[in-house]
Length: 413
Image (tube, rainbow, N blue to C red; front, side):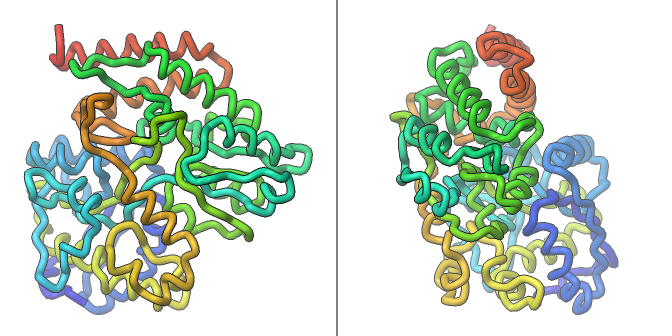
């Protein structure tokens, strides 16, 4: 265990309250035992974490020694000098980090956040239910076929909903999934001049489809559901299908789950997202050396082995989507039936700018203004899903809000 650089007596770490992060608190007891460094964990719901970490880091508040951030923030915050560049020893083997993750967390070739786990998105469905209904779901299936499958397995009288999808407002909550749907319909957040395009036919078609699918074949109250809420529903046997982060497969407890690559409506580019929950050090931290030593351990090959060999967890629970070497471990291959589908989804994600999508990012745009834009639109999409607004009114309000933010930021007059 690499702990020689850990000179601080304690570190305060802000983490998202997802399963792998929760597990880390127990696994890291061994780190404290060896180094003497006490770890103070602040576990927050995703949206709250983003708000608190952004505010504290932007103002130099100094509340945290280590923060969970992702691909949207890391290169932007690194370029702005908000977070420290990361350098690790040769044993860390930075080249083992999957290129998609390494590139997405870097700016000008410098790594600013280390991936604790990485993910794309995919379909996770109950094959027992689809088989019983006589339907199937293929890799990169059409949305029409997915809707037909959801309708066939939808059985609310017996507590089973055809499709469980994100509806809770947030740029990294409902908008992560919604953006991939829009991408697959041929839409994008902005045109080549970075003007919002939420008033386009593609956005209209995608959002009407999303609202119809989830409104007819999803659980009630979907506008309140994001990753953790749906994971709980799935493990209670209430979801026939879930399209979400590949990392969810590590935590599914029901039998008969099968996997497929994300659906599309004719444009597969951007139909599955790309993300990493990563660990970074706020600039100017007095405990930067100790924080770097902990991050080096927590994102290492050694850590993967520690989870795999931990009596409370095992090889089906190791963090995935970060290191190529994990996928070559026989014990992991035996325990993780989702591994091939997850890796294919990560490899298939396309964050680079294109003529259709003139910005970096799949389910987000890698610009400083995106969290504000995405959060404003997220509220409107939740209103459309709940029936409080029509899709058309929600999109019109979204376009106005996005246009105001981008105009004020100086992208155009």
